[in-house]
Length: 149
Image (cartoon, rainbow, N blue to C red; front, top):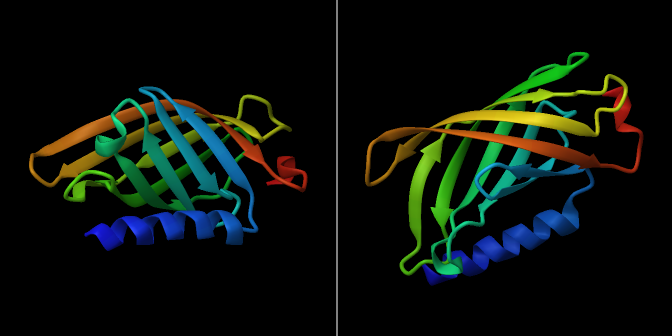
């Protein structure tokens, strides 16, 4: 499993080096930081880091989302993901998640800022099923004008 840490770090850096899409940063409640690819496409990816833990126990979550058509003031997405602790010894998978996300654009013609509501059932490996909810604010960085989603 030690090789998994190296592979995970290489994949993480290569995503940042090879990505040509918009990148967004989300600050969630409960000390969670999210980085995701363009939501203007049908499929997007998000990496969440749960920062309220020690580094060796810090959960990291990878999600793949299907994004429904963007409306004037909102967008809905549903996804699948895995929550793991890659720096613990031994590496451990914490849970599988099914996040559903509602993005609300408070400013009609400026879709770079969004308010995020997420509800995700967690299928925990060593436990039962739990429901997680997150609230956050997302800012999208892009080279083009993203207000024309």
